[in-house]
Length: 326
Ligand code: S3P
Image (cartoon, rainbow, N blue to C red; front, top):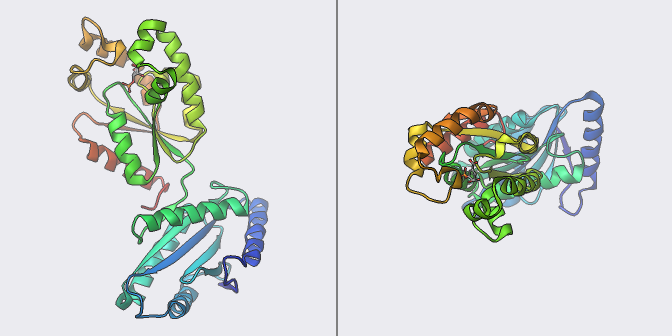
């Protein structure tokens, strides 16, 4: 472990220099690396002084880091670590290990340990961007009450599926749980047009609506850290699908025609289902659209699941893909 003597947040030049050096090395050897910020939150002040905690922290790190890891102080009771040749998953494992050790070490003082992680190159290619991403992730972890390990999320979660699949309800809850933003494309269209979707369909026709939809999808696809819910027909347009894929993981919320019928038959805001025989219409559209929906990264059959269960499945999936350490 290389311990840098960087005490103040305003005196970051040395650390910045190492970070830039690691960026150059990682580009040369085509390796990722991680920047991990760990901060101890003392629940009961007084049992240990901040310096004591920091020194204990460093002593513990000496046994758990590699020679090539670079550590510097972060605030009073935190450290910043550059972990060469370590991707986001490795950064999470590191933070998790330290958290376990710190818990044993400082048990009497009752601590929580929050972590923010950003990795090169996926979260940024400059030292300032990586630093910002790791700090943002740490901030989020602390806001969640400490004892959290957060990674910088440079991706969106896109929920696709037929009308009534639960995209909006699941999306709202998922965003809340993951601390991400939520955006419903239909809501954006309605706000910008100043009228309801059904009114746009009846006054201007479906292709006019699809144009508005395409513009909003394009705009929203450039964002990151959002759960996005596009309308059920957005994925029929290849441009939309490509745009949503750019920063997004596509999750298909699947449901049977019977379940969709049950969920939608008491509502009247979906022009495509204002049909003499909505059940037949659902079956027909589902048959046609199934291959478009199936082209997602992950499918969840929501027919027999409640909202919380679907949200849990999505979080498990993104955890498996090592996109979050929560
Ligand atoms: C549509 C689905 C609707 C809405 C519009 C068209 C579709 O959104 O965009 O009525 O083609 O499936 P929801 O899937 O959110 O209901």
